[in-house]
Length: 455
Image 1 (spheres, helix red, strand yellow):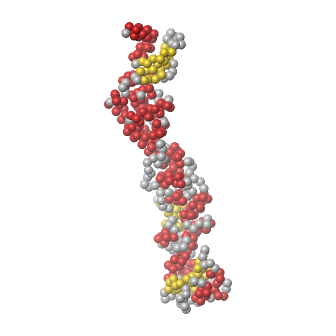
Image 2: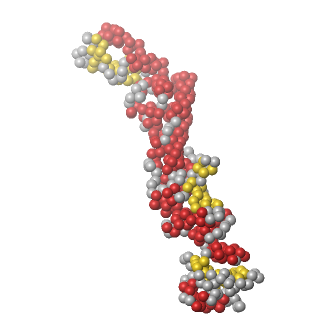
Image 3: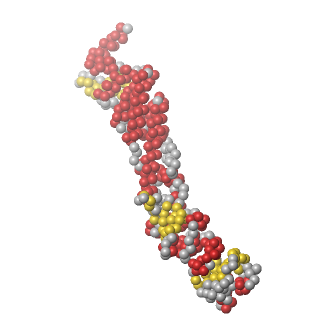
């Protein structure tokens, strides 16, 4: 028989595979049913037609098998009856590769149908068909074969789901095996510090160390705990005088801030998105009782095929994206909130603060005049402020009225004396002068005025 006008895809002594260019040529070499029924036109209708011919048994039921391939494929025996593709593999074993080349490497759905019909593929072949297929576990019942899927990249399967692009950047960062970059949440830690916001993270011990530093360099800031404005000014002063130590504290804060966000987001991802498609019978793979979240999943060949058909998708990536839209959901919070949702390691942070504060104190005590001209006097005045509350009237006696301490400046205690008569006098005292003011009162003031007149 002359096959010259048909494309010969394979031929040996027993088997022949040809691609029929048109119905006219097909009628010359193909099965007789094409000429005796309406099948001829139906078979060739917008489809490519192939014949698998057994030269030795051409007239038997499976002597010629016809494969019509278009949007879907149909397989016929020599008499025009529908058969399974597995029959073609069975009766034409030498055409295994040829048949696979025709239908097996075209799309995923076709491949799954082939597996359901008993065809087996190597892992390499499966990868060529769809890069997200890892392997197939073949069973005696082909439709029950398990198929294993894998997803690469830092975010794995999550990269195909319906996340905001900015959120996905953070997801990839917290799941990356290479770790995340410093300042992941891009907090302006210097702004936060100079606003005084970081002081709230200090424990009692470090607040006492800060009290000591304040008493050395700026005693008028002694009430920094209660005055928001002073907190900001104090932080700017600390950064100006001890930039290395403060920078170390801020870097450590940033690291703990990022870590809190990292832990919170990562925990949520494992909780909410480890196995997001169990309702569709796509399950995360377990290895030694450990779930390989985001990267390896398993299902069954028949289920995967049905999902692809139902969702009108042709690849695993398209399927996951579509299922993600159906499942819905997203992150529980705005991405910038995760550092506040996580557990900030205040204990570790305060160890760093303590270490740096002690370094600052050592610097001051080794060279006190560099950091304050009145350090010895300031330390004395702080003792007075611990006894008499700032900006609070203190009664002296019935004759002398009251006084209010308003601050410290240049080694002097600033005092407003309100006399019984209502007269207000603004004064500044050294430590000794203030004690004399309290003990000697008007007599002391009279002697001072007299001494000034004499001079």
